[in-house]
Length: 71
Image (cartoon, rainbow, N blue to C red; front, side, top):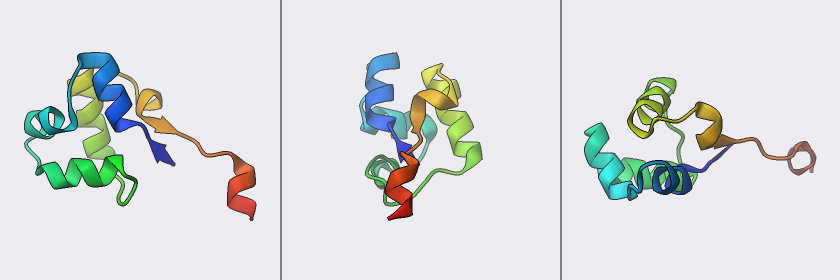
């Protein structure tokens, strides 16, 4: 699953990842780690992101093509 956190935050609220981290009350490193795909947010944190950015989970998550996972 690819996370489009930076793009969605910018498009929906004109937020930087730093501002999103402050709104969520989380360390910046956590948000940047999600944005770079090193870790994934929990469902609870995905829900918080959606509430803060006033978006749907589909706006944040992007499924990778199946072909990429088969090889």
